[in-house]
Length: 349
Image (cartoon, rainbow, N blue to C red; front, side, top):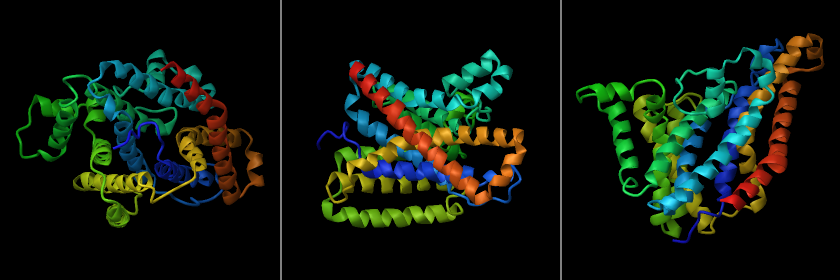
């Protein structure tokens, strides 16, 4: 198997953008409600999109770093790149909001906001609402980083998965101090929450992708079956508008991972080709995911301070204007901020 760590899978980049777009549609679809223009215009399957993000994150991280396992000298590189991938755009997304809240922020609250560490409670009031998902990401990054260390690489992830499964499906086993700790708010909640089944499904898909890809003739049929499988899981969770019930979460995670695996195998095998130009959509997905909420809040504040300006908009025109603004700001962030920053950081490590 050739080394795929340095090549982007454009199909998955486009899929990442679609998921981000679904979250944006859900949040902007109710823009008229908060300012009295009218009922919700449209809804998007935001829960399904968030779960896809988690599964894709597991796939991408394993695919990018599986060859680093057991090599201590590679760990600083892993930490360096994860830091510069997550924090700069997140901090940038806070800039439109901070002037509204800064006067009332304590040092303790600010430290939790800016650090994104997963030690915070699950119901922590985020400044940028989508940031709650990043705390699960950070918990996953920490555990995956530990799994790269010698002597731990064959222990950390299996033990973590066993404890996760036991926490949710080991009801017949005797409860004790460990079981109580697994359900404690803060870090245990982020490490042993249901969403982590998505990460593990993505990791399992990447493990198969780099070691035992399916024969070429089976890839399209496998994608078709996987899409149907995922469609059934989405149907059972109200079209992706709600998170699955507990027994269905691991199965739903497997369905997402199967689609990701099939798309990656098809593209790597040359059976599914997209122009590299489409990679810009994948680059836009993260800033779009974070920035749209900040822009929405600023616009709401503007209309509350200048109520007469609302009459110039209908619900549809406001929705389209905010969507266009969010897309433009995401593109501008990629071109002027993220891409130059990533090129610079990769020269360092």
